[in-house]
Image (cartoon, rainbow, N blue to C red; front, top):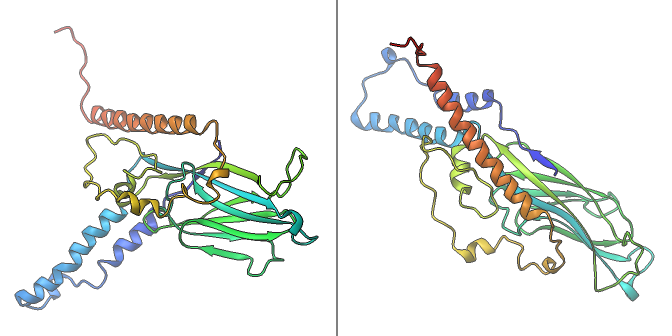
Length: 285
């Protein structure tokens, strides 16, 4: 099963951002006498720093995963086909269960063959898809860009556009050629803000954290009609989406893996507590 891991930013970046919030402060012995109003104004950046800490603080030994599918769907034009325009096709990225991915995706960039006008297509809202027509098959580069609290690095995928059935069966204007690939995006050590934001999202596989984790309560659950705006359940192409025979098992395995990780975190904490306590030697007394 292909898996992509979006690595967390290095500690140096977090240190730089937190250091910026304290730049410009003078030592206490150089501070002039301030009025109560001025003191009140000076206290505001401190609260902003606390909020910033919550957004950047990372959960160690925790992973969040999002199953996705990238694919192409090509329809033969039949009698309307010509030598240089034989098929209409669509390339897309969707949730494996057709749920809204805008909770993590800021934009998706599709890089088409350079023979197309404007071959770099930027899609900033779902559905994340591009439709075109042509006659040739080629590889399409797909770049996924994430929201700032998710990941600061993009992930690149590659998908081969297929126009003709591989079994050499007759082409049909009613049945498209569909090629889809299941993938899973892994976010190690997510920020607290990201975890809280997606822990109830139907597209996310989120571990159950030990009680020792003290996180703020999740935000209000989205109204179902709001959530449907970004999913692909009612997409005109959805009737042709592939049903992965292993998808349910893969999701169950991923969920079990998250539970194992949570148990590992718990055992590590218990071990660290034991290592910090002097061991008792059995003396028979």
